[in-house]
Image 1 (spheres, rainbow, N blue to C red):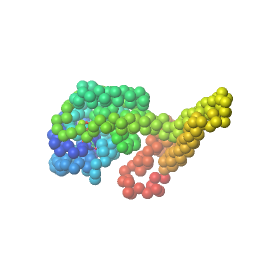
Image 2 (tube, rainbow, N blue to C red):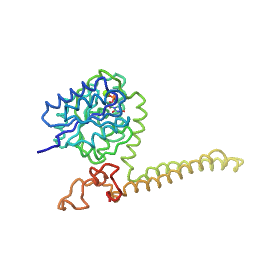
Image 3 (tube, rainbow, N blue to C red):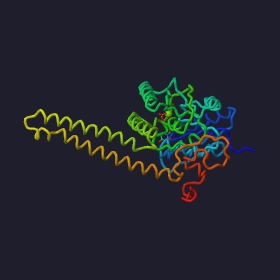
Image 4 (cartoon, rainbow, N blue to C red):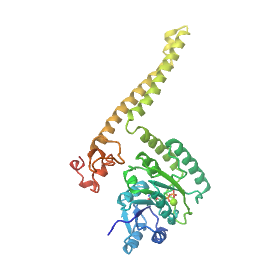
Length: 350
Ligand code: UDP
Ligand code: MG
């Protein structure tokens, strides 16, 4: 007898009382008609309206519906991660609670996982949001693809299917749910994209405005840094030092030339250029020092897993339990599979 479902559908929900019942009924209907067994995990992200009560009422006579209630609003990223960690299925699919995603598409995306992909990303080609939002998001997707090298048409679409382990290994904070595909590629995931249907929001409000544009830009910078420098932060900060000190040289060179061609060399030399040069020198010095501190922090971060930052996918002619080939030990959660945080002690991690 198996007690884990084939797929886990994860739904973050925050203040969606107007449409949560309708969405959940629709998801249950649609998923019941599909081939695979499922569980529906809704994470109530600290809603201050009736969302939580409505969910509990629905869950009372539907065991496949499981609800996690956050103590307060922690954001969509936290809600999705909590759902991913609670998921028991081999495949995990995320959906918005507002009914904008089409649940009938779940089967198609999971079929594609079976073709050997780790992530299948939904693409709302015919998107039912405002004209401006759709355009802004198109440009943003293009830029994210250029900068991260992970080219997708629709990062913002929540409807995506994942092999369970790739999302469990992702470490997401803030609003990084938008960059899940990039994080999964950092763990070696193979990604594909499929066009999915999209519906307009029929009630309630979008939780995000155009203020997100700046936040996405900041997050993109962080993602790029993590992609390239997370195990060698000194090289990132050292680059800043490099440019700052080149600036110092240029400033002093310029001041030297001014002095040579001036009637009063000393006065010419002590103009503005050397001052700027000194400021740049100090900046470069601070950057190097920050880089050295970042190196210490990074090393301390990997200490619980013995400094192992690489992940082994598989090994040939090795004993299944060989220490050196344990898959994905870079993640602490793997070593302590299901112990809740407060039960963890330092010794249980060694
Ligand atoms: N959401 C959440 N916590 C938040 C904000 C949003 O769980 O702090 C949920 C929300 O209920 C919805 C999904 O995340 O199910 C996407 O939010 P929304 O529909 O407002 O975003 P949009 O589709 O407008 O980008
Ligand atoms: Mg929405």
